[in-house]
Image (cartoon, rainbow over all chains, first blue to last red; front, side, top):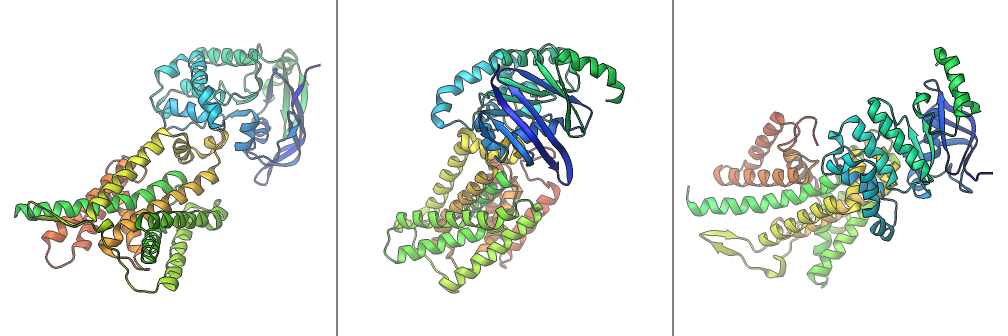
Length: 239
Length: 290
C-alpha cells in the first residue's frame, strides 16, 4: 500500500463570509498525480489554497507527512516541501527571470542554497530552455506560456515534495499545453507528488492516477481518470 | 555670472542634493517594500541627529556615537512598524500613511520632552576644515555628506540588486502573494524595511547636524523635502531618488544664489511641484512602469 503524504480531513474554509470548503476530505499518496475537477466555484482552487496556507482553514485538519499544517502561514508551508502555482502565476513581473528563479529557493538555508542553486537552475533550464534565453528579461515581458514555464520553474527551485498546480494549462496554445503536461509527467516520474486543478480533464488524463469531483465545496466522488472522464462527458452540459 | 559664484552654487547644490538624496532613500526603502509613505522619516533624521549630539557631548567618540544612534533609531523604526503599522496592516494604505504621521508627532513630542526646544549642533566630522577651490568654499562637512550618501546609494544598489534578502524585499512590493508562496514573510520584510529606513535616517541626521543644527521640530520639514525629492525622480527606483535629490538640491541652491529676497525655498518648491504636475510619476518613471 502506498504511503499517504497528504490528508485533508473534513476541512472547512471561507472566502470572507462565503463558505468555500464545506467538509472536504481527500488524500494523496506519495508520488502520484491527482486531479480535482468540477464546475466553476466548486472549491477546487480553495482546496489548493487551504493546503498551502493562503486560505485559512476554519475547521478540520490538514496532515502533511505526519504533521499538521492547517494552521501554518504560506511561508512555513513552503519550507515543509509544498509549492503552489497560482492560476495567475504570481510572478515578480518587474524582476528578471533569473531573479524569479533565485527567489524560488528563498526558504532554503544559506548553505543549502549555495550548494544547490546552480544545479537547480540548470535543471529548470533543461526543462524549459527558453527561460535560459530569456534569463535577463523581466518576467512581466514574457508570453503567457513562458510565464507558466517560469512559474513552474520557480516552484521547482524550492525542491517540493508536493506540487499544487492551479489550472496550469489555462489559456495556453495547444503546443504549450503539451509541453507543460509533459513537464508535469516528468516531475511525477521524479517522485514529486502532484495535485492539480484543470478545467479540461482530457488534457491531463494520461498523467494522473486518480481524481476527485467537487461540487459546492465538497468532494462528491473519487475515481480513476477513465471513470471521471465518463462522468465528465455525461455531465458536461451542467459543468 | 562670476565663475567662482557659479562654482559655489554648484558645490552648495551638490551638498543639498546629497542630503535630499539620502533623505529620499529612507522613503524609497519603506515604499519599495510596503507601498506606505512613511511620514515619520524626517523624525528618524531628527532623532539620529539628537542622539549623536547627546552621545558625543557625553564624551563618546564620534563613530561609536553615530553607530549607537543608528542602532537606537533602527529599533525605534522597527517598533513603529511592529506596534503601530503591523496591527493596521489590513487597513487601506492611506490609513497607514496617517498612522506614520501620528508617529511623527509622537516622536516629536518625546524629543521635546527629553531635549527641549533648543537647537543643538556639532562641529564638522573630525574637525575637517573648509577648503577653497577657485574662489568657492567647500565646508568641511560637505565631503562627509557626499561620501556617506554615495556609500549608502552603492550599498542599496548592491543590497537590492545582488543579495537574496534585497531581492526578497523587492519581491514583496512587486507581488506580495507571490512572495508568500515562495516562503518570504511579508511582515518580517516590512519590519526590516522600517528599521533600515530609520537607520538611514539616523545617518542623515548625523551628517546634517554640523551643517543645519538639529532641534525637535526639524523632522516634518525634512519629511516634506525628502518626499518631494523622491517623487520628483521616481520613488520606486533608487536612480529616481538620486536624480530627484540632486535636481532639488541644485534648484534650491541656484534659486538661493540668484534670488536676493530670501524666497528661494518657495520658488524651488514651486518649480518641483510644477514639474510633478507635468510628469506625475517622476522624471524617470512613465505611466504603467515602475
